[in-house]
Length: 238
Image (tube, rainbow, N blue to C red; front, side, top):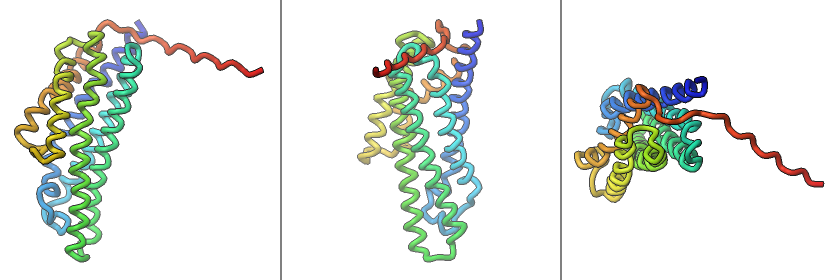
């Protein structure tokens, strides 16, 4: 019973963290609009409060995303250590890229607040550079990395029926669609925030949301959490 309780707590933590990533990410596009949509933000256009909140919520989303992998690792490693480590690594990379984007965005706020009396053309150039870094971070973080996350985690979830198979199936279907959509954005075929990009990203979004809800409400199926086997002691040289 104790091991089952531990597994349930880990699944609950992962589910709540998944839901937190949605809560944190939904308002960010609107909050960051003053700086993302207006290159003159660094010169004083629009307010800064929403932008600061948007950058902070990106940071929250990054930490919560890494937390999902940390919480699920003791469960998934029982079935595939490679997939468990891969999911932890891909989530960490995604979070790191997201934080880089948030720092770039908040750096524009700093430029605006501290150097607004400087040369306008220099401020615009610096602001555009930082905004470009944010945009590429937004593409390679939330754009590409959820596809890799899904391939690592959904494979384990589907193969060993840790959740109803329809949930990880959405992730396995959505991963190549999201990767193709983000690749199309890299080569200028469509914008990352567009109708076509939204449709191609929808299966991944539904996979992550439904997984978060299921882990929160039900946990994982048919698994117990044991104790890590002890490492073999190396033989001592004579």
